[in-house]
Image (tube, rainbow, N blue to C red; front, side, top):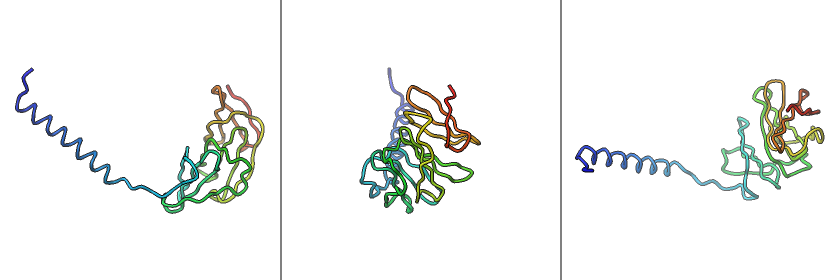
Length: 155
């Protein structure tokens, strides 16, 4: 197939666009210091800070847009956390371990054990209107209508 001058110009412009787009993205990347205690598996914004789960090391918090991180594990009795979520209305934080839910009402500074029974193999936790949901192993879904104190299987 014979390439026309127009085809060659299109190819050149497309290649140039891709090259400069990638170059522009690379220039906007800034490496940050930390967290060094492990690999975060989930990072959420609380409005004034970032909080990340680090499996086996609990939670890390950054108040300077991720430049520095400090442990925020006061009250946690299990540092093997699978997920974290924030209630958009109240600002309350929920951290999920295998069979435990911890909550914080002070932006992650202190944590309280809210539930340690009623569900197993917790993987994901989400707050939606008046219910709190956990997805466990084998795609079992648990629901709490009293902010995580008791749970019932819904599927």
